[in-house]
Structures are given as structure tokens and as C-alpha cells.
Amino acid sequence: MIELKHIKIGVIALLLFGIVFALTGIVCADQGVNATPETQSLGTTTTADVVGLAMETDAGAWTLTYDPPRSTSELNVFTGYVGFSDSHPGTATELQEISNELTANGGFIITTPSSGQIYISQLVVPSTMLNQNLPSGPISSGFATYGSLGNFIDPSPTKTPGIYSENGIHTGVLDPGQIQYTTAYDANIVAQAGHTVLTKSMNIDTRNKVLGQSNINAQTGLTYIATDDGGNVVGLENLMLDGAGNTTSASDRMLCPFAASIASVIPAYCNIVQSGSKFDLTVGSVTTTANDKFVSNDASLPVTLNYNINVKPYGTTQGQIPAIGSTSAYIKAHIQEARGANVSKAEDLTYSEASSATGTITAFNKLMSYSSQVTGSSAMVMHTITPIGSDISPSTPVTVPDGGSATFFQTQTAQSSSISPFVEYYWSVDGKPYETYQNSYTFTNVVADHTISRGI
Image 1 (cartoon, rainbow, N blue to C red):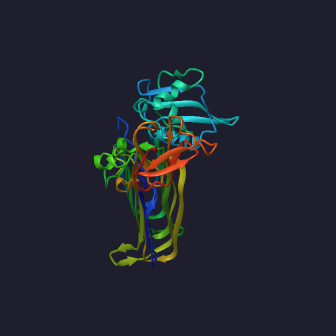
Image 2: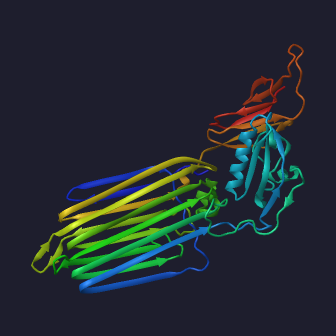
């Protein structure tokens, strides 16, 4: 399972002094969303040299989602009820493991506790998991595979035909395996009673992008000097990227086969980053760049957002005139991440920064960047517990994440002691004898491979 996901937020600000901020190695990440089959590109370029009034307004919002299709051929959907006694040790833990695995592969299970029992009220098992063994525990001792769970629902299970997922933009909870992004951009420039030279380019491309490319790219260049009393130029610009994803299969989202081979799932996340600037000048030169990238068919490529504003003197044939007025820029980020297939939030990071300057401005330069990607190099370490001999369940090797747990059961009546009135169970763990009054043995905090068998 993927554990390390990398995010970097870097900021450099120069306001006659330097500020540097960086966060690296944070355990979190975004994964891009696939492009739609039909893609679009939109581009504009504006140039103006005006004495008087000049205005430029840009605004746009774009939401893109990928919600894996689930047809009858891909899913077995069961509805009904099945109860498990709470006297079974580890039932809650086992159901959580079952839920995590189903969610990671596009299915789900809904459980409801009632009258001391746990009920399955709805079960969705992808066809790829029908023959997959259940996690070790009391449920798996009776139901060997995910597919067999549906056979024990009372009343008899019914398979729901047709398409389960709507495969579109949702306003509520994300579907299993769904990824959704929204980006928004707005800018407004008003220059009056002065000489304005403006160049503005805007490009939107909905295709999959690789490293160094952008889905949204806006560049602005402006020089202004007031020619009448009360003349000024006011500018405002913002770029936002909001991404959320449910637990997804890494093998479907990482093109590198070596990364996919050591990483099974990409954890759920919900990350939003905003950046922008504003200025109010009577004289000066301003350049800004704003771009982001979030459309990709490879989760190992980073999702990025970059913003830069540079306010500098107004150049004339006689020399440089310092900028006069005010300017500011900001970045805000809220990062929320899960670990592995567990959808519980494991990290919550918030950060905000703002810089401003007012008066005679010789230099104001602020660069802000966000980069977040999935890296397979830090996939969770896995260990194998191998059962030996018969009369033990599960009867096949069980893979356990580092620090995880697994439970095994004896399937035949144990020997009775002539001394104790209790039934004794004999185990052999890593070749060493162990006896207990329970017919189960649980490995906890697993950090190495183990063997287990029914003792003599």
C-alpha cells in the first residue's frame, strides 16, 4: 500500500527583504484525474496601448471527475441482511478490513449494529474480487471468499442489474474509486486616467498533461503611469485548485509497472490550494503568471499550482521610476489525507501566508508553488504469515501490512485436559509451542514473517 505521498509548498517573497518558506516530506498527495474522451483547448491573447480607460476581466471554473463505471458485468450488488454475533472475537476489525478492501477496488459494504449483532445491509462486490479470500477472522472461517458473502444474506441476495454508478459530477459523497477536481480562475484590471500598455494571454487545455505542462496558464504584463490627477491602475487575480479522491487502485493509476507492483492503493484525500495577488498603483510595471496541472492518466505525475507576481519600476528613456502605490500576494492551503485503504483522516495540514507593500516600491517579487504526487518508493512493507498443516483457517498464506494483525482459527474440536475443566487449544507459532483456552490465535503488531500450525 502506498504510504509516502509527497507535497511541497514553496514561497519566496522579496519586499526589500527575503522570506523563504518550504514544507517537504509531508505524507500526503493528490493524484490527477483522467481527461475526458473529447478534449478542448481555449486560448486568447490581448494587447493594448491606451491613454485613458483600459479594462480586462477574466473568469472561469472547471470541474472534472472520473467515476469508474460499474455495470452488471463488473459488479455483483447484493441487498438484504446477514447477522454476525458480537461474541466472535475481532468481528469489528474484520469488517473494517473487508470494508477497506472493497472500497479500494470500487465496491463497498454498509453495516448496522443492532441488538448485539452487526448486520450487513448492503454489499457491493466487484467481479474481480469474487474469488478473493476474505481477511482472516471469524467471518472468513465460514465464508471463504468475498463472493460467498452474498450467499449468506437473509433473505436471499438479489443482484441489482444495470449501471450502479452515475459516472458523473457529484455534489455529495464521492463514489468508491471516484476522483474529482475543480479549478477556478478570475482576474480584473481597471486602468484609468493614464497610459497603459497591457499584454494578457490565457490558455486552457483539457488534455492529459505531463511534467512541465499546464492545464490552465495565464500570463499578464502591464506598465502604467498616471497622466491626470486621480489616475491609477487596480488589479486583482486568483487561482484555486480543489481536488478530492476516494481510495483507488494504484495499478489502474500508475503507468510505471514497478511502482504499481509494490503499491496496491492510493489513499483518499481532500486538498485545496488558493493563490493570488492585487495591486493599486499610480506608476509601475507588473507581471504575473498563474498556472496549474491536474489532468493526467498517471498518478505518479505531480498535481501542481504555481503563482508569481513581480512589481518593479516603470522604465523610461530617462531612467527607472519606482512603482508607487500598494501591492500584496497570498497563498492558502488545506491538506487532508488518509493512509492506505483506511478512509479515516490521518493528516490535516493548514497553511496561509500573505505579503504586502505600500509606498515607493523598488522591488516586490513573490513566487508560490504547490506540488503533490504519489510515489511508489515508500509503499507499505508487507509480511506473510504462513499456516502449516490442516485443521486451521485461513489455510493459505495471509499478507499483513507492517504493524498489522491477523487471526487464525482451529477448525476441529480441540483436546480436553483431564486436569482443567476448560478446553485447551494447542498451537505452534514459529516452531514454538503455545497453548490457550481460545481456538483462535492473533498476531499483533506484525513486523516480520511468521508460521503457524495446530500444535500436538
